[in-house]
Length: 188
Figure 1 (spheres, rainbow, N blue to C red):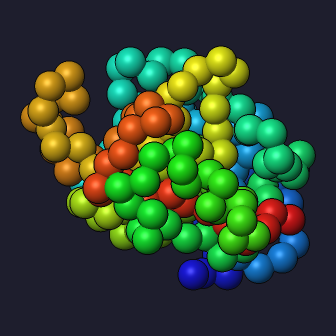
Figure 2 (figure 1 turned 180 degrees about the vertical axis):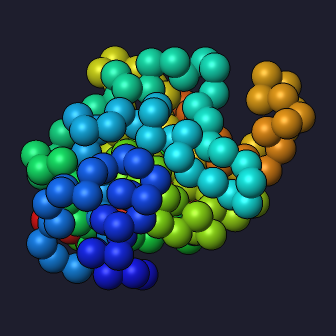
C-alpha cells in the first residue's frame, strides 16, 4: 500500500479533496469520511480499467446507511484504517454469521465508505468472484447490507457496465460464494 501522503495525493488527483487537505496521522488506508463525500458520489470515482463505479438503482438510499453499533468512525474528513482485509475466508457466510466472527477475531467490520475508499487506492482488491460486503454500514430497520462486486452487465446494470465496480446490497441472512466480509484492525 502506498504511503498516507501518496494516497491523499491520489484523492487530490481525482478531485475528491483539495491540495490543502490535512494529511491524517498514522499508517494504513486513507478513508474519505461520508460527511465529506457521500458514498454514492464517491463510488463514481472507482475504476476497474475504463469502467466507472456505480450504485445499483434500487439502492438510491445508500447515503442513509450509517455505521452500526460498535463501529466508531473518527470525525475527521480523512482518517486512516489499519490492515484492511477482504475476508475471503468467510465467502458463503451470511452477514448475520460473519459479523460476530469478525468481532470475535478482534477486528471491526468495514463500512461502505471505507470499502469504496479502499478501491480508490487499490482497485485490484476487487476481482470477479472475490468481492466483499461492508457490513459495518446499515440503514436503521433495514435488512440490506452494502456490498461491492464486479457487474456482469445484465439486467438493470446494462451491458455498458459489464466489468464495472458495483455498489449493491444483499439480505443480511443470505449467503454468496463470491462475497467475503471486509474488515479492518483499527481506525485512527
